[in-house]
Length: 267
Image (cartoon, rainbow, N blue to C red; front, side):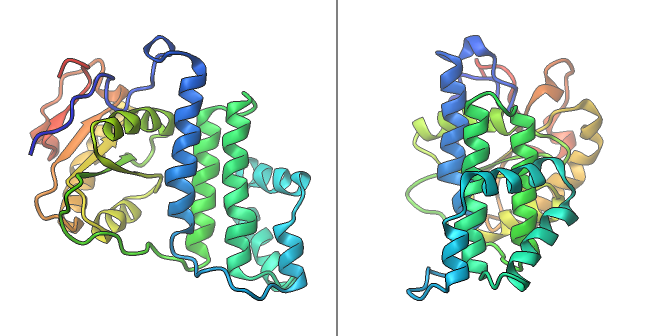
């Protein structure tokens, strides 16, 4: 299977001059939040019900200050504090799980994207906030909805950061190159090996790409790649590596268990 031509170092932090403008960079991240991350956060929740209780309606009409307060909790507070707030809404305010997803999690993810667009947050903060929202989703017992279980007419790629890396902006930019080349892209923000394995097992991917931010993370890559390949719905999924960790050192992809490393736009 041939991989698409990449004109940007795969999973590296995008340089400003590599894009038409900083607004292009922001648009890529906003697009990923809207088209990838929010649907992945919400994909398992039930269809909205016709009957909405007053407390649910009130939560759905939460004002900007309430959403900002919850976003701040996800960005600056602990996971326990954010989860405790959601538990309070469910147990004391009679909010449904459906309402938490539609009235709180999705708007908060959009708000984080807007704050990035307005230069209030950097991409590291946005990544951490989105990971916290995913933790809340899993805490509420929602699992990944099953996706395609076999190869289809459109090639599918899962892009993710290796645990410990936070390069969602790089993933956002790279995902656009894959899309332009005709791929269906899934951007995973799972922070752990087990969640990445679950994502790979959940649906068919023709390619899996990992961003690696630090040289120190290379020691853990063989185990990550081995586990993901074993779990993958596609038993022959190639794994492509890239990111800042490979910019200054030469590494044999096969020694890590991967199929290739891409850091040069000419590759």
